[in-house]
Length: 419
Image 1 (cartoon, rainbow, N blue to C red):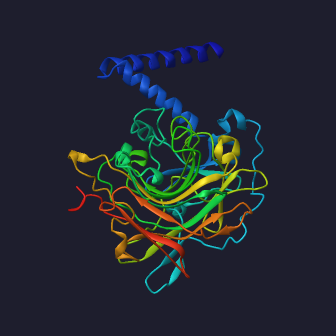
Image 2 (cartoon, one colour):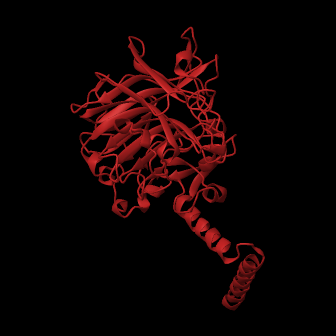
Image 3 (cartoon, helix red, strand yellow):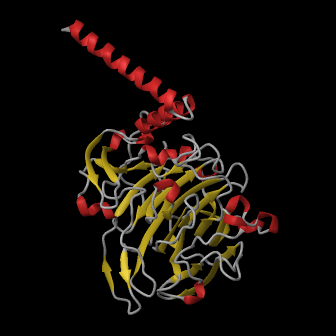
């Protein structure tokens, strides 16, 4: 029996060798292509952990329900013997309940589904939902190593609004921000849209940034919001995302669970999965609530989605400056402007309409809040705004009793006043 098994194994090896030789002989890139395919396969094995259950989403995604202790974060050498923190030590004081809501001009509101894959099932307790990474996802990246990572210079620089910095790295923003103090978290309710993206290598997002350090090589950043990125996901769906870096987007950090770092505890919400439904121009409006805060007991940075879903945490050891506190908080939109044909991109930010159009037409952030040194969630005393080119993407902030600190923002990109 052993001899028979040995022969079968040798035949399999010969067949693999023949397929490898055939691929090298017939592929235009020959061995280079083969090497990349092998690297992609290795990367996929690292990311796609064994699933207890798999769910086919209506949008084509596959959501794998992975044992919570087998998620990619635990590949990190510092997390090999980590005890998972199943709940934060403390929530911020003054946290009010917000869930994903639908609202219209008459202020009627109804609860709605949070993610599209929920139509076809849920993950069991003790597992977390992970969007399965496919080879095409990795191959769309500039390299296997850069898959799931932002490009450098992808942060707003409101204090450096010098003409030399405009569109540096192709990133443009419309943001509100606070700085000059120590911050221990931030919250916002973010209007959800599906903006048009002109080219596959461009994206459009709405998010909050928790920042520490200088806007140089040592920037620490924790980010969360929604994103449309054909390069990352292969479609134009609006998706929930997180991001982190401790070295200004150079070597550390990634989106969602695409590297070791963020530890997820929620079995309900999948990072990178589609948010549904989205807002319609002059129609129903949809929001998501995002809260990120530093647990004063353990020191880890936690994220909550809506009022019901504590998503997980970034261990404090991942960061240098943010191991203590944040020095800047930002809320707003970001797009990539790759200047196709030498003109400004027509990729939309927010709804694709300027802020002066108001509710139902322009995108908004409302109920902006920060967490102070006493773990109190409160409205900022003041906010500043910044955009590189207001004729392409703009922002207008205000304050009232219903929405607290808020702003409308966004724009269409290329237009008669933005070439």
